Length: 133
Image (cartoon, rainbow, N blue to C red; front, side, top):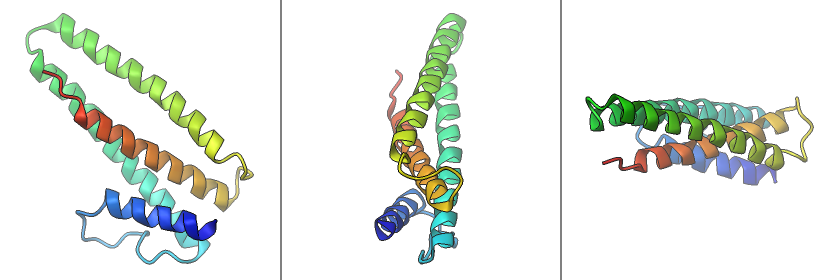
């Protein structure tokens, strides 16, 4: 199980950060501490990318509906509402995925961070795919 989590983390980190040439905590992951560091790094990076995708979408709404205050306000609020509901679903899904791990230990934290990173990457892709036109 531990090697499977390590493999998932390496693949996740590689996919999310393939464009970067910098060294990351996900390079050559072997011991548990490195697996934890990689999962944390992946989560933090995925959450930054998610915030950027969300803010980019809000900017696209403003551009698309320039001068149409009502439409900008309504669609922006719908996007914010959807994001809040999505976060509840993400958190509930990650509680299911981490059920077997006692909270507070590194295995739980690694599983939690991995889950949040994966869900955030998926949501970023979704937000980027919205073609508001």
